[in-house]
Image 1 (cartoon, rainbow, N blue to C red):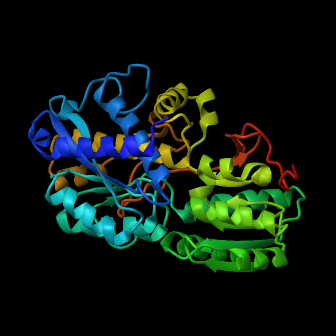
Image 2: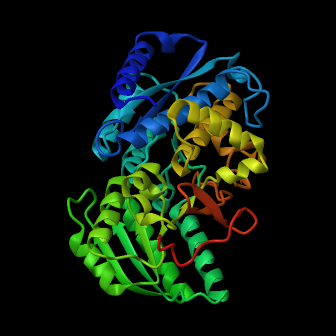
Length: 416
């Protein structure tokens, strides 16, 4: 597996070579890629760039066995076979750093589009910069619904947002109730940036509409050093379902603090983020066996769609791990953007934006369990279907919806 130090060093060399003349060659198109590659989110950013590099391989080299846009040829035929290249930037999980790095990529590195950014709070500032410079931005893995509701014309998101994800989560809970399970109360636990706030707002609303009682509503400061008081609130409430919205570091602290205080929730139904990252499960071991997270990606789909398994194998060869909710979305964002650039037959931002607006990729031509990729007037793909994954036996297993499930969900969580 690539080390953080060698990864960052290699990224710097790549960016330098692109900015000193490679971009000027007519044979390539440069795209800016913004993720955290230092700080607490570093591994997520490193994995994201690995996923995007797999997409570059698919786009730039012939892969006749893959059912994906541009996979069977070499490069972008609409631009004479030009290769797609990336210039990376570390936004350090800081919204203002993200804004500055987006502007640098556009004005100095002359990228034709942007991809990023993991944290929704950073996506909010990147998208404002992309709008100002009329350069398209693909919010690859950001799930805050508000990102595509601000009247911006240059932001696009192929994956679901948290209202879509949360609706699937409550559909699942409704099904459990109909099957006779006791699911009456929920506890909301969420960090205080745009991701956690938006997630809790929609979950609170859906709980009221569907007849669930919110017995704990716990907001905490992102990257806090202690969650003792918050976990004590959760333990006292003892809800039927705990619904956390946390990034990886906070998620690890949550589970470890629960263990220290002797709190074992009946069920965890997470809004992905840190709960889709293997690093969290490696850090807390069996304490989280049976947790469920929403997601965009189901590796189990490989049984029906061989391309899923083949792309996963490519990613695993680079990273040493399977694709997950985040890396799958980052991969597909790159494919969707390349398809639009190819159809635009141009590196001009406005033309690429118009091509993105006309995107219509059938679900069978993706690695996701989606109906298709087609953007509405706000740049949101409303045909991106969510799945629920349960952590069982040291792997994610698809348990919902029924037509994609390979196992029945274990509810309540395993006590192992």
